[in-house]
Length: 288
Picture 1: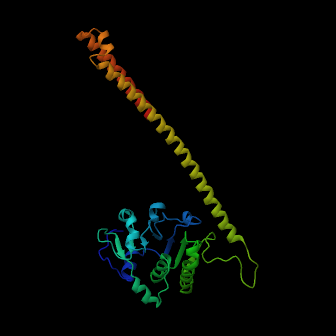
Picture 2: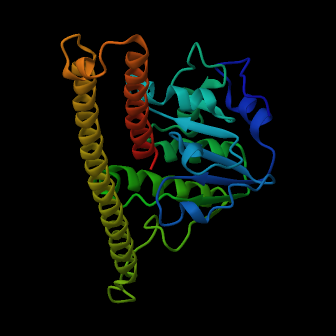
Picture 3: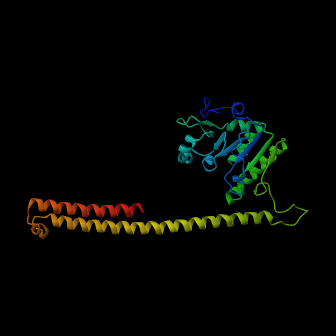
């Protein structure tokens, strides 16, 4: 698949002709509850990601989406440029040939609505028009406050739309998307989904605490290394000061050798040997 897009403002049909290679699609998100379970290396499945995910979880991505304003995307331009996938943005970047525009207006016109509150909603709408038979969703939870409030309802709407259109949309049990702790009128509240989220949060807290301990250990090591280097630097300066004094014409060391040329040469060799010893000690200290 070529990275460079000749048509930077493709229609849905043009995108479909170039990028649909299978009837099976995986839509990838960042949520750790299921993102790492996806078979992203499978070359027989079309795989879509977003926002630089292909750098975090490398795989066989064909399309990547970044539906953000240029000032936000500016921090990710290098990742987009280096990606092996084609990136669909709000508008193609003039200096990055593997970027093209998302056909926003055509998608809204095709469905007769403008209910799109997250990247996933645009991806699902495009996937429906691509006529995928199976759509697997990994790494999409919508469990954070902002996402839960106004992104998750939209995401679940498009999942329902796709299922109503005859597509098989599969979501891992670990995801909060399209899940509920009870069935109204039939069951009591089942805390299992919330227990899964609680377990996930505790795992993330544990991981962050471990990372914090490692960071603290590295900080202590760095402080120790810095103190050692400062000590070595002080020692070098003191020795160099002594060498400088010994080189002065009025130095007792110069008087002691009698001022004879051959004696001065011997003294110079001794001083050079001492200097080399200090520098050798410095090299050993730094490398160990």
